[in-house]
Length: 147
Image (cartoon, rainbow, N blue to C red; front, side, top):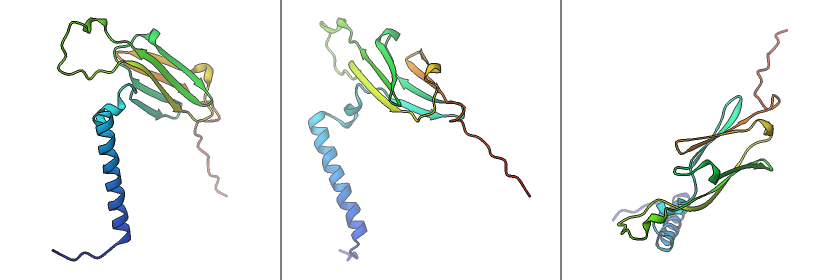
């Protein structure tokens, strides 16, 4: 057994990691595996270019009419309902991982966007929302003058 010098910083990290592990184990036992915690919440990517914000979300197996998009108080709101198939009554599943039901996701978007120019496309299970920036919000290069 070796002697280890006491370090308050190292001990604080150890305690924090033990607390995190305790909560992870508790949640896993109460709610299933940690993979199940994200069921029903569509994954999103938020990207900013010089011209616009792009929000991409994976929502497979849905129809356009089942997806709602709104913009309010600088939040883009995605919601909808993925309906389960009614053909499962006489079938025996060994494993069922696909999620069904209502979902809702809100994404903050900075000010300086053109609300009347927002576009949304849904193709092969991927929803892409384009939010163009106003001219004032676009980055500008400032020339340095030499005297």
